[in-house]
Image (cartoon, rainbow, N blue to C red; front, top):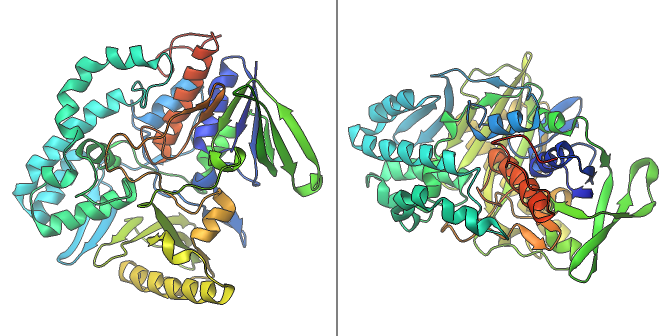
Length: 464
């Protein structure tokens, strides 16, 4: 059996390793020169900058990335933040509140800043998050093929959660405008929408980020993808252009090479295809962004001085909220600053209009960033990325996955009889841990439907 994985993002790499561990011949095609996609790191002037994701969590025992590491026999080069570490500082109209690592530490910080009326919300959040964390790796959503029986078997565990499927996060929270603004800032990062629109169950899981084992990745987030890529056949500068179909199945993918093989084209045949890229171009379809999807405007740079923690800071004084990520690099500091931006602003522009809009958003971003870290403009260089930048390098202008307004927005994983989708937006949602779990699920599902059933990852040895 042979599999082709298109895109060396986290979901694709996890699926590739799981399939290879089960004895499948695997080839990974990656259009760029490095793995990770929007969870990768790229070089500029001798520094490694983050392509997208900056805050990684999920390395605590039993958390998603720890489960992935155990299932695939991989070690991630990360340094976990200790209990009580000031992970994220949020700037609000009434001051600055810090989200430390650890539930008890965060509850104390929340009580001190917002008052004791927020404690019932955090108790509800912790209870729901613990239930969801146990369920997420096993929960097939939306169910595919033989997964309906698996979903039915989970009903006793799902029933206590059903009331929160149709409530919004804001319904569970105290109606303090400062606290609701704080929740909006957190959920825009994690669920791509506000507390009034995020369904409560997803919010409970998303807000658990500081307590799942957040970690610093020396050398950049891309080191995690590099660890997953080790030992795999990854063809870089290999851009998949079209899936070739026959009788409702894919039998090959057309590939155009760059670099030393520039101009060379190849048809790569396989029995199974895993897509860690937007599937529409490969199927000859136009890009389809949800109407409420967001784009990102990002600023990358290197500061000529060290910066103490918190290494993650958020300006929630005004919209658009700005998120600043910092990574120590000796006596310097690598940073990424990102803002949500409406996609419609960047459509149909002339080159001159695009340049003016980019400059305007760059000035706005730096103004918001300076409130979080004075001296940001002293960077050795500044790189700006717009939704059009993301379309060029990631294949689509919208980022962050589907806004989690209800539990039925996750796309189908199985696109054709032997073609599967992994990565951002596939259940259990956004972020690197979710993408990793999507890779495990697809490997398990594909092997099962191919008649190679075994104990499902990450609960036992892979099928052979």
